[in-house]
Structures are given as C-alpha cells and as structure tokens.
Length: 369
Image (cartoon, rainbow, N blue to C red; front, side, top):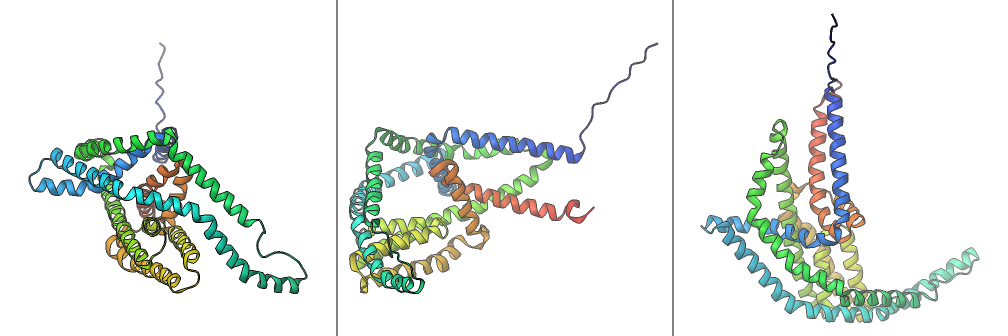
C-alpha cells in the first residue's frame, strides 16, 4: 500500500509577516510616487481643490446645523468663494501685474545702485586686506552689473513667454474651471468618502488607525487653517504699512511678505532681503529705509510671538526644520504641486513617526524581551 504524505505549507512567523507587509507598503508608496510624477502636469487643480475643500468643510457643517442640506451648503460656499476670487482677481491682478512688470524693469537699476554702494565700502576694506597679504584682487567682479542685467532680463523674458504662451493660458483656464468642480464634489461627498474608507480598514488595526487619523486631522486643521489666517493677516499688515511709508511695489512686496511666512526661515529671509533692496534703491540710507526695516521687525514679532502661538499653537508639534525639509523635497520631486502636497504629507509623516516611536518604546525590541 502506498501511503501519501501531505506536505504542510510553510507559515511565516510574526516577524516575517511584518517584514512582508512592510515590503508591500514600500512598493505601494513607490508606485504612488511614480504615478504622481507621471500625472504631475494635471495635478494642480485637483490639489488646490482638495486644499480648498478641506479649509471650507467646517463652514459647510455649520450651515448644516442651521438646517441647510449638505448639497445646498456646498453650493453656497463654492459659489460665494468663486465670486470672491473673481472679484479679487479683477481688482487685484491688474495692479499686481503692473507693479510686477515695473519691478522687473527696475530690478537692474536697483541692483546696480546696491552694487555701487557695496563696492564703495567694500573696496577700502579689501585694499587693506591686499596690503596685509600682498595680493591684488577686486572687491567685486567688474562685470557683475552686466551679469545682473542679463540675469534679470532672462527672467523677464522667460516670464513674458510663459504668460503669453498658449499652454499657460490653457493651464490657467483649466485651473479656474476644474478647481471649483473638484472642490464642490469633495465637500459634498466627504462624509461618504470617510465612511467608505472606514469600512475598508483592517479590523485588527482599525482602532489604532482611527486614532491616528484623528490626530492627523487635528494637526492638519490646526496648521493649515491657522497658517492661512496668519498669511492673510500678515499680508494686509505689510501692505498697509508699506503704503503708509510710500514704498514702491508695496502691493507685491506686502503680499510676498505675508504669503512666504508659510516657508520657515527662507521665506522671511527672501521677503526681508527683497524689501530692503527695493527700499535702499528708492530711499538710500534715510529715514524711510529704517521705517521699512522697522516694519519687517514689527511684522516678525507679531507673526512669531503673537499670531502663530495664538492661532496655530504648540499642539501642532511640527518642527520648522521638518516642514522646510518636506517643502524642499516636494519641490524637487513635483515642483509647485510637490510644495503643496508637502504640507499635509509632512504632517502625516510626523504623526506616524511619533506613533511608531511610542510603539517601539513599548515593544520587546526596545525592552529586550
């Protein structure tokens, strides 16, 4: 009689299963990044629509509490927001365009004035250094003015071609048309999306995942909505002060100084440096130059010591260097869309890393069990 021997399939132990699951998630994330890079040219309207929908969702819930249906509340919010954007676009964009063109045209002259002043005080210092070391070199390259003019001229020509090209017009039209549609459907269907995602959570980890999603939502809400409020307040603050001082291009510089507060460190350096260069080219070292410097100083104090602690608070728990790294990484991967996606993704990764560290400190791997 022939006896059959049954071969039992090998079953992975717990550690093998965990590494297998980790490998699967790494593959999924890699494919997701590849997909984003492939569709990056059409992502901007959808990303902006998601941002606007997330920011406007609390207003929709408030209208629902007043007895308005979610579809009607979504339509009211979307149409009101579109009307506001169109009004601002018609009022603000012509002035911004005029000031920006004037700034680009005046940039070589302003930079040449700054260069001449720097050369004036740097040359004697370098001459003394040459006397001490016995070398002979110039304080600044003699052709730096020509280099500045060619650089600014190239940027100006590139901007003109970009804004006058058909592709830019198509992208702008798509942005204006698709973003409100994406925003409307995301706001209206958000409860159904959340319910469907919740039903697909693995039962063994559903409670932990829900808890971390609540932490992520609280972090994003505190940071994104708070940061938008800070940007709006600081933009109005700088525009008013620059207009009172009489600074040229005050609208462009005020909006820039208010909006770049979202970029830690680099944003302030960029806005203050550009503002002081324009102020020096207009006033020189006079009273109004120091007024512009004082305006930036007061703005930094208000933003860092009052608005950010009060509106955003410490509960966000995102270090500025982590946000800066995420924005730079997003810019390298996906350009401007990557910078937008970096804001929520860095918050999500920060929350997940904190959760993983807590689990590690309670695990046998750390406790040597």
